[in-house]
Amino acid sequence: MSDHTLSAHPVAASVQDPATGQNPATGRPAGTAQAVVLLLSSCLSVLGAVLLAPVLPAIQNAFADTPGVATLTPVVLTVPALVIGLTAPLAGRIVDRLGRKRLLVGALLVYAVVGTAPLWLASLPLIVASRVLVGLTEAAIMTCCTTLLADYFHGTRRQRYFGLQVVCTTVAATVFFAVGGLLGASGWRTPFWLYAVSLPLAFLAARHIWQPPAQSRATLPALPWRTLLVPVGVSGIGGLVFYVLIVELSYVLDRIGVTSTATIGAVSAIGSLATAIAAAVYARVARFGPAIIVPAAFVLCGLGILGLALAGTVPMVAVSAVIAGLGNGLMLPALLTWALGSLTFAQRGRGTGIWTSAVFIGQFACPLAVLALAGALSGLSAALLAVGAVALFVALGVRFLRIA
Image (cartoon, rainbow, N blue to C red):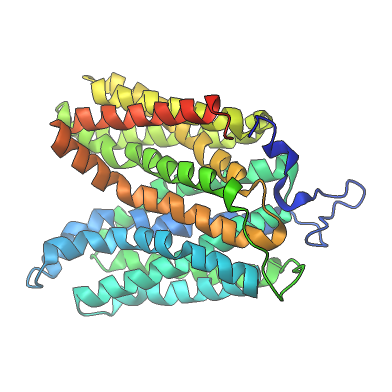
């Protein structure tokens, strides 16, 4: 596939009418209100990933008498991402079959119920079960939001909002981590109240989001697997590479003797800021296409991860985090653009679900893969060197095999 193939197959195979500002796929012009609702709702997917991290020790202490508590407690944090990875393709099929708006509003309402359930649940296994349901609703919400952004917006506006989706979720992760710590000071159950934020979002979605008219409900057209499998596979690796900075940065700092939580937080914030900046400028560089941006993102991530593996001082770690963060900011919107590039309106929900599944499975697998590599290669540094090398290899493959 040549460098310009993707640009020849724009998402939705349509553009906005410059005279009316309307999108032929939706029949209505979309604006700031729709974008804000979808971007804010997208942030709920990271709420489950980071909000509870500061209170995990307190949860484990509260259920110290529960068999297997040391295993079940981390699952409270990680199981939503695994469930998203496993069920997002099903959510995508439902999106294409039943419609975007109905599923989004329903999922936002259920999210509030199952998200706040641990406020009243009395056992750790029941809390874990509620977290599985949180993952199911997050899969539906993420798939609907991303699909609707692609439905509503085209050209440079779509690229801008794909980038802003990464910006919003990155900033939200930082905010939720801090808020979780503050709320957790008054008890480990308190942070779960924040899941109720989906209720006003459900009201806003019901008011401002509309269902794009389906082309046909009789039979869903088959997905173009020959053109979809490669970007989805690369996206799975991208999800793993993307999460390395988030998961392993504190361990890298610990390896060089940094124990101050303030220093760890500052370096993490620097990396997150780099991610947000790169995602914010993605729309300006999107004209180069995934054939250029996807390899560039993997190169930046790879170099940053290699730097983390070799760094011996805090400034070196910070510089490496910035480089990896810049790659992270470009990676997800570029991979999403690539994956959805050949899909029509009736295929886009399923395509988005499959792409979301690949990314989240990659993210869930990241700490497990690094841990396995560290055991096989004698330490974290060697494991990060291996992951960094894989990222550079993927960049070379995408660029020189001309598959994007």
